[in-house]
Length: 460
Image (cartoon, rainbow, N blue to C red; front, top):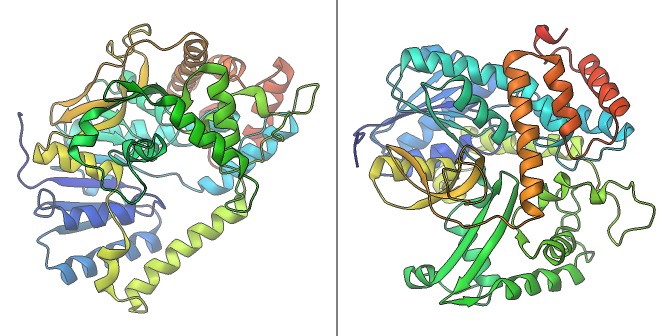
């Protein structure tokens, strides 16, 4: 492996991220490959930044790690000498995703997440992608050798835009839904290869040929064999059995509702198991409530703003409790664990040779899709970047959906990068959830009116 990094500097743009900041700190302290380096937090919310910086200092002191910690409100103050720059931000995302979903529902588009496909995906890119490209331009000037890792949704849109509009910056995109090796272990349990309490050994892993591919959040299990035996039917049967019990309590959030029932229905249609159903169900028109007959599954529930605010508030209460001593700081390292992005960074720095699911160009991995299709694929990855492993063909039917979703994402990336209303309209009308030209135009108008504070002036 080339370009080994001895004391890596990792810059996190969006230190207050609900899903990343705390785990990044855990990994940077825990890993001997990373903890002699620097963790730099960036956030434009002074209160949140100060809390994360104080928490980081306390954890480092408690653990006796040699990790250096920096904090800045402006990324330009810490980008120098960076080896990795992770984008994990979304200003007021809870508020605006709620607006996206409520406005779209008026026009028959129901989004349980609203951050990657549908009008929600388009408008989230309009809010966040300009900042991503601006930071990438500064990376090119200030730390041109750094790897930029996009963790902001819509991951495919932002990943395509970085590759096309910041071509001199080394970049790839991530989503935590296929964190390795956990995803393989989960499906090994469903296949009956191991029991839930059994260790997932290297020998079991070597015998389990699991191939997953597709656009981020629209990924499918294309092959599952254990020692040469097709175990996908066993996995599907396990999902079907879960579907029978699906209404018996449990998580009732929009992203969690009816996932097993929907997952098994999609398996029956396409012959492949969807592996990110909480999002995949939103990519298809089947549960939008527009059919003439009543479906076994009701129309999708839309994104819940208030419960997500409550989750964020609970996170910040926990951070505050560690800082004040209500929770002993000695328990921090037992409370959290590794994150997908920092696992990959550790692997790249340490040359550990582990494979990970990464959003990058296909390059022939899926043999019947073009080489520049931006897909989530199992990759070998080191300091030279990700290299997708072979997958095989994407089945017909699924391939058509993949291309439609890719076209929507590519058009969105181009529209936002160029601030082109005609391309924006084309992206919205290519999107698989939009039903009419009049609806698309009305959604664009209503969302531009409602989100003027967050959308760049060029759209007005």
